[in-house]
Length: 400
Image 1 (cartoon, rainbow, N blue to C red):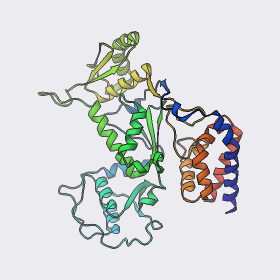
Image 2 (cartoon, rainbow, N blue to C red):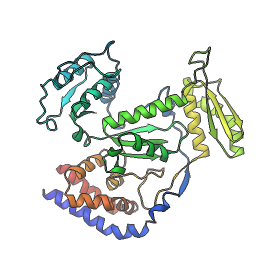
Image 3 (cartoon, rainbow, N blue to C red):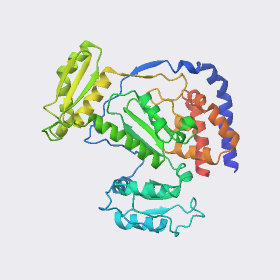
Image 4 (spheres, rainbow, N blue to C red):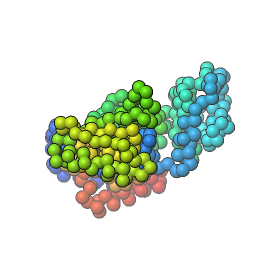
């Protein structure tokens, strides 16, 4: 394709132009492993919810409805699905949940959608868990897009990533949390291991931004939701209902002046912000260098935690000069250049990455993986070059 070749030549030329400049500016890699900085994540009232919620910026109201319907509990005793086909599964979801289900004919070419491939009782407590378990038996997956649900192969699903925003409403090291997620949830599916997914900490949002497949997102959400709900939810107390029980959170606040001020004002500040989720009975007291927050309201605990983190600050890994990051010291992973020119929440960088992984010439893919990180840093202070690269990428997407 002439357009694609013209575009890739332009991108390659810019990479070559920036290579020496960016390499000269970058310090040794081991400096990054020890350098840290203090950041002050901004508190977000949207995080102060009764349960842990994840935001998918690209989803429409219809797609959010599909996600909600998938969490519908299965009937008592589950569903018998002996000898059923993929078409039968799609019909079941349409009839019982009203979800528009599409079978991706291109990726499923050669797969007999009428053949009986499922057997035994349904697995899991919800339609989502059942769907995921049954599709796994056939090396299939699904994604929520275009107002419905699309069933496709696992390989094709990797080309349909979704960006989701995961709040961090508790005390933790964002770097360690990112590393933990990549270690325990499908390690080969992250860019650190050559996979398609990425994870970054965004300081101003006090959140993780994750680009991944539907299946991996669900595993990340399960891990974070269960961990945060147990961490911030009320502790069961003998003789008291869960609503009456009060959770206690301990926060390190080394500065005595800040600690004393927070002890006096934190309850009033948080309750003024929270409205109906306020907890007038909440208490804050100091024990040594710790600030103890006691409340039966999860929204109060979340907001108090974020207020403390914003005021005291948290220590995160310091990025290398010239390396793209999202305000919190986390490297952005593969497709640094597309993220730099489009921005992290613009889905076009994901489309360009899909083209780069699946259709770009091998030599360009190698150059992009080798020099993309330093090239993104080189582009940042150069708006004219950034606009030229963006125009080239636009042409790729228009022609793809």
